[in-house]
Amino acid sequence: VRSEAVLYRQSRSVLWRNVGNDVLLATPDGDEFDQLSETGSTVWRLLDQPLSLTELVSLLSDAYGEAPQRIASDVQPLLTNLIELGSIEVVEDGR
Amino acid sequence: VIESSDPAGLVFRIAGFGLPGHEDGEEPLSVSAESCTSLLGFISRHRISGLAVAALQADWLQLPPEYERDLLARHREAMVGALAIERRLLTVADAFDDAGVQFLVLKGPAIAHSIYPDPSWREFGDLDLLVSTADWKRSMLCPRGPRAAPCSAGAPSRFRRAFREGHRLRWKR
Image (cartoon, each protein chain N blue to C red):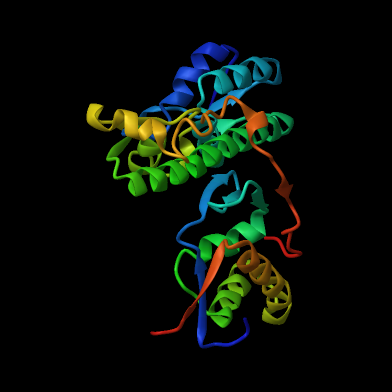
């Protein structure tokens, strides 16, 4: 998860909807729904395009005016969780 | 800002949100608390919570805070229904592909993803599929096809709903 050789992006198969500032996620094979609050939703929307962890943290740091270290410590568990749920996928950085 | 106490009339104006020319010709709406309960009932009945939330986010529709929360809760319910139907659509589509059944998706999901700027603006409560007469019997016999489990957002007990709200991060704007 921490390697810069990988990028994160929204899983192509996940279904989702905006609900105000929040996002509802539904993986195709599950029967549950996950709700991301405003900040989690921002992460989700940014991952519309593949981003490295450093790029993601940098964008969030600029947007929220928080130190990158603090952002990173919050974002890493969220990414791990969303990968486990199948909502985010990891791709190799071929750029 | 127009203040209105005519919920039925307001629904028509909200339904026009996002149409071409809307930005130029429509004054923002401010709805009193007295009218909100009735208005939200109309919004749910006419399945336009997505348009109402979009109008809210654009500051074109103004509701008292407690009714904003009510509208968002209604919209979330509506979107759970839409996502459940799209899940079912994926299963049926796989089953039809396996059986060689050609089909078209009509109305709700198709329109939500092709016409609207954001599919969250479009509610739908069922799944309409067009299958050729020649494929009709075969489509009905698919193990994971439409007959395996009826598909309607109007039957919420068919769907186990578990919201995880644990993804709250500590920083905010």
